Image 1 (spheres, rainbow, N blue to C red):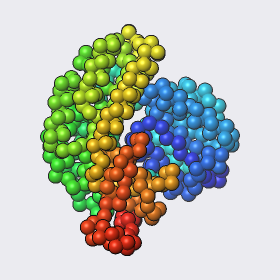
Image 2: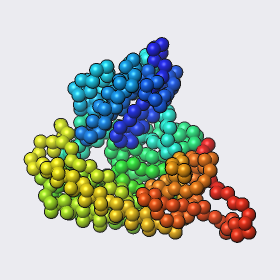
Image 3: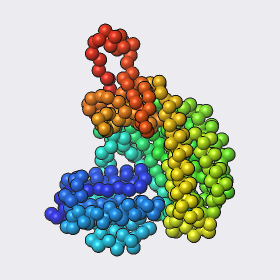
Image 4: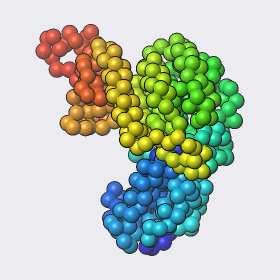
Length: 436
């Protein structure tokens, strides 16, 4: 290890796969003997794991690299990730920033410290751990640059993935999120592979929740749906990108479904799983999208009753073909559509949360925020409640007493015996599992 590099800082932008790859970089840095710092000014090595999906994400990545150089001019600042490939010239223009292409990300430490990457488990600082089991996409939607950077399809062997899941659970992670660029193509998209892996996680000791990251609605096969129903650990929350509710726009986007097919399959999923939170992505202002076509998107979103909509103003990103398509909407019109989608999103999200009032739910406690504990339900809704810090990292049962902005308000879900004790004015304590 170089005598000049003793501390490091990691900055991450973009998707859950990027976050997972940052966890691997953290593990490599720690194994090489570097100490992690939260203050960039105290870090000898700063790695900016960039995102290239939108112009906004690229801008954030560039600003982070510049800020790192300003905070510590003596630091070694490295930019890697998707934008390091797609926007290399812009990043190279930042003085004192080294560029490492996405494909060489895992070997940064080998290059800088002559420390072999090897096979190391990720070190995750979050309550909820990520487990990447797939990478790469060959869909080539016309707005998307990701397949141009992550084109090679790859899947983690099931035995290796299970070993990593056991390691994460042994470190106290009660919930694991299975993630990939195109998760449904795990094991080359064989119909039962993801389903079998989901059920294999049932035997991982200490693991209580399994969540899927973004998955295409067409990849939710009958086999996978059956595994979701049988699994005791599967969380009823699916992120199913829609992008548009207009069939002509969907065809221009090269999406493999139409609006009726999406809604039909969504109804089948809900029929099989019961109450399931469904979140989605929608692009506002795709080239050529008319006002009427945008109204179709609003209509489909309302009918789908999403619990959250991630809204993306169209971003022209070469080499994606949509960057050069005619009929681009004016920026003011895109902002108007974004505002309308945001208003609908708030309404739909509030409807979903309101329907939970009075329910007893299981909450994975993540942190203390604004003086109260905060955590996520199995269907990924935030609940705030009063409790002890020792509950962080554990799972508690709460009754939903009401809503407060984007959060639900929870109260202890007492058993009959505990309620009787309370009536006798005996002290009761909120029960919960501590993080191992």
